Image (cartoon, rainbow, N blue to C red):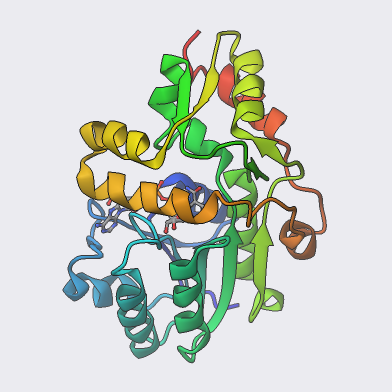
Length: 273
Ligand SMILES: NC(=O)c1ccc[n+]([C@@H]2O[C@H](COP(=O)([O-])OP(=O)(O)OC[C@H]3O[C@@H](n4cnc5c(N)ncnc54)[C@H](OP(=O)(O)O)[C@@H]3O)[C@@H](O)[C@H]2O)c1
């Protein structure tokens, strides 16, 4: 692929930080983009987009806050059109497994005329250590509207490695990689594994959507609470309760296991001691 800089949109986030780090370690010139970078990038201000795209060879796109947001498809459409106008050679979109809106966004990228790779990920393991569930884990109670559904939690380090491969190797052009971890776990199983690794009690409590929305609303505001509650209602119906092989297809190895994620997060001290 080209020797031009690689743009990482969402470069301080769970995936973008790792993608940018791996690219820089590999000697690539990286342009990090977010609301506090120079130049800044804001999803709400399309006037900021041409400056970050200027001169880049390929781009990683992690939409914020979530592709489940109703306005996401229109933004992805405008962004891909800006990428085309800027002469971007290849775009990698982080997408969500089993999510209607995310799949609309994938379709927009497919039809954009850009060379692309779609990285369609399941529920992140790191939601428990860096994301919206971190505080719940620290308090010892993970309350989710997920019933007894099983999820193949995917490690964000695996997502980042696939994204970097897609950004730097033409062989991944036109592919959609569906990424999961190697095991199906219920949220109760996940809480038990976190508890064992952290050495402190952590339990899962299945709550209703309304209970979840109300609790999250006071912590994260009604807009994010609505978004995440609706997303949970959509994806925790068993549609993602199977394993995918995108990681093996992209990288030729097995995905990282949830137990290894727990060990690493516990030894980094993220859940307290
Ligand atoms: N969590 C999951 O389980 C899961 C599963 C599948 C797919 N996904 C997808 O993952 C994507 C999120 O990726 P992530 O988890 O790597 O990111 P993240 O950890 O949620 O971080 C968000 C990133 O976007 C930036 N950002 C936030 N608001 C912004 C705005 N208004 N304008 C510009 N930049 C903004 C943030 O930087 P600043 O704050 O510095 O601007 C940060 O770098 C979503 O599109 C979601 O659909 C998530």
